[in-house]
Image (cartoon, rainbow, N blue to C red; front, side, top):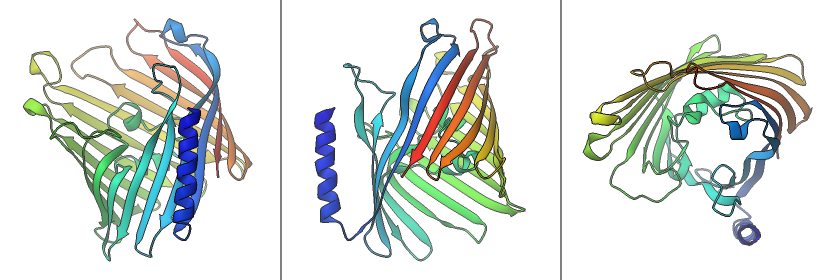
Length: 323
């Protein structure tokens, strides 16, 4: 780990010195928790408590010209522990953006267009990912090419073609298409439609679609989303798997330094199965200690429709820091 950090440090110095004139911003972000599993369906995780980093970003943004820009971002992987029980660092983003008169071109390893709007209105990625991300219905990063622009004054669009390999190299001929549309409807209300389609061998294709309705004011931000997924020939006897999820979320400004947040998710992993749904509640209070430092006590309660599982209940104190 020390060797990797040293190499990255030297590389960042080289980049910053070589491209000092175009380096416009160096930023970082940290989600750091103390957590306690009060209840858990996994007996080995019950009463487990401790400290953890859930996310750490180090980002370099470059403005090469008034039309050409680029981003380089690193992130430690804390959920994919290697065989030595140590964290490793991977490339999160590395793409360039070129601005044409009517649209923008992106190429490289970049965020996909299907999660950013919902995440922005939810406002608390520091507490938990959106349900689409959490359940693996969307790929948050992919290697490919993307176009973003406006259909008119109120409608934005994004389309992307990617490898469908997340951060890995391509290993097959199959690809993934992403489509995103977002419209402002008036009265601070917005609506979104998202589609992504991945083809696979023997017509084992995957399709996900999402509808979202959002509202944001000076004191409130929130919305609801519905996701439907189809995995062709995924089950035994080449039967299709149908799944869906509903998420309702919001946060409210109590004062200049305090906010309250609440979210409720319904997850149906297989419409043909019985007693397999999950109901998840997220709640918390956000206190702004400093401009870039927030302390967020929060709870996550997960109820299983199946009586074979005990409910999950986790308490956390989350520190959200950025610079």
